[in-house]
Length: 416
Image (spheres, rainbow, N blue to C red):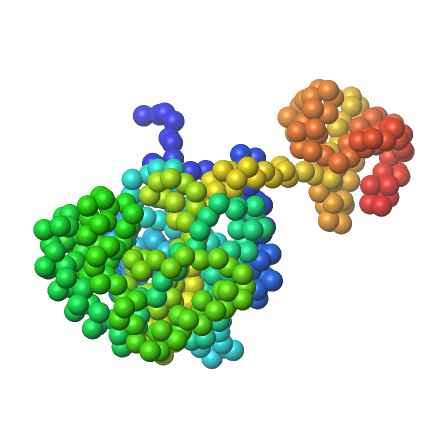
């Protein structure tokens, strides 16, 4: 049975520079800014042992309960396509003994992530994500640096309509006492909550605040009265959070304190944040992160503090489009258009030698007429077009007269 096979629902194809030149601009700016901040690239496998995510994300999280792509391989091992980038990077940190390197280890990755859910604008089952992690330092200044890095990336990309929401969700010392108070309140006010919030209260109480603004107005009003973690922070967490805010102030990064802000994964502690874009739907979060001081220890490593964020690239590009940001399509340096009788194999020699010198070039492989080849050169944005004739050539550059040139002189002229 034959027929067209389309991509799976919730995925998309990206031809960088052809369909959307913004993609290439985003990737270039990410590479540049991570280099400026001394973050090195890391690449982890597309699938991991399922236990890595079940143990770190939390059995009560939506990621584990509803969104993971989990399968059993031919050796009966349970594997999962990575739903997020932090846990795999921390797994690599432990497995390769990176705690012996100078700390903090500053790493980033750009990779596809996989979560099952209803596809929508800015929400894909396979989506591209930037993950930036600083592992090995408890210093609140690194929290502020990594937040400011993304704020600076948005500025470089021309995104202005967003807000940064900030909170602290405490640590092992102060959170247990808070959860006792919160659970008591949730039980007492159970009738005012919806089924989803009651289920969260039973499995992972802190997550009742997940997607706070997506809840009904009645549930929002009820949760607004619930005790907040900020009221129960220990002295160390209060000090840490105050220093993060002071550093953000020094950077000039504006933020809003949101006492209901929690992250949807169990491994977060202390500082948490989200960058909210201008999209008016449940997918408006363009980046989110926080501190995870117990994650490395949870997967078998030594006690190691860490902090980082994940940022969806599709949502970032939507934010750029809504800001009116544009990018030029990629171009090439030279295009060889072949007139009738042109020495084709000599052109192949020129192509190879110019490319070896770092000069981008191309020619026609579709049997176009000379007019069609010149049109193609324009589509490719060629800076220079060389019309190769049987005995000589014409070099054509915008704003300059055509320059006749002998075949033997072409390489030297084009390499200038």
